[in-house]
Length: 383
Image 1 (cartoon, one colour):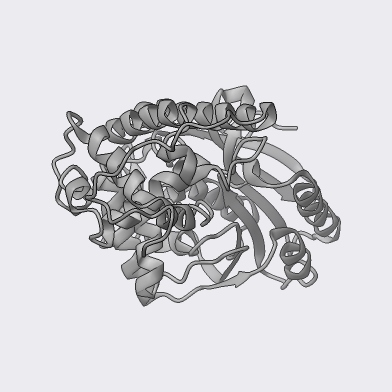
Image 2 (cartoon, rainbow, N blue to C red):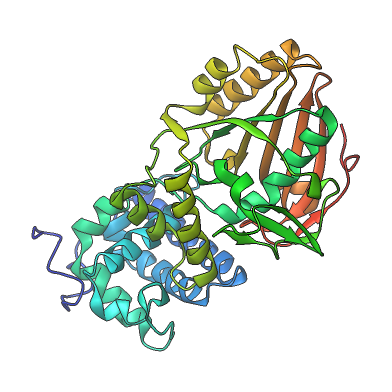
């Protein structure tokens, strides 16, 4: 594991910054500054969403990046002029993977995911030394796309599925795009609820029973899933050791409840197989929607995917949905359910478009990880 950039393993203490030299050209400097701001922006999000550890580390990593330190040496090959394709979370997943592989024992002492304290005092210095000692390895790990297959989002998504089931009276065929490992394809096997209402499997190892702040109607009727399948550009197999490692690394290391839900979802993936095809979501959706089975409602769904799509891919995907929507009928309806940021709510939310008809409804408001789901009603935001 040694080369010019990889000075040693996670507990070595090499020089933290590259030797002084000519400054980067203006375009390169702008990219570095933009990357530093992406890290700081994600730091604020992590802190607001209950991860003080990642909030602190990413904020300091932003400063280190701006100064040309090991953070920038790791991320420079992946930095892009735009949003950065979840670059901050890819960095944190790369480091978390190193910890999970027992390659950074000093940093592990701070990481609750492996029994660490979660203390903030002194953690940045150890984190920075870990970066500096593993530049080449972490640069390779950071190539991986963001694969946070957050099962908490099923608490929001199932609001849409329940509404489709109630409006059509039909069992569901679930098609997830950007599915990662397809863990949310097993949502009918989760325990989901709140406000005195529950749906799903009461004995499930995935417990989302406190995620609904204002529960939806029809919850106790549940859903019936007759088919489930997904796609992803780089799918993860949750039944393999590598797949479990990749998924665990993407969860924030100081959020024990999320890690517990992931462990439960991995157990359900072992019990209930679901295929996730390696494919681009636009072409895959077009193929999957060519045929529809009478007596079944097809539901295409995704969660926190849209913002990562290139414009041309998004346009083809939406076009495929609309084309299939024109072919939909009452005995073979098509629904599009998504949990994404909704500007009108200034929050994440759940929207549903149902064909025939093609009306879009904003059904619920929720957190980015599927928490605090508030039913808004089927007529909210109808267009």
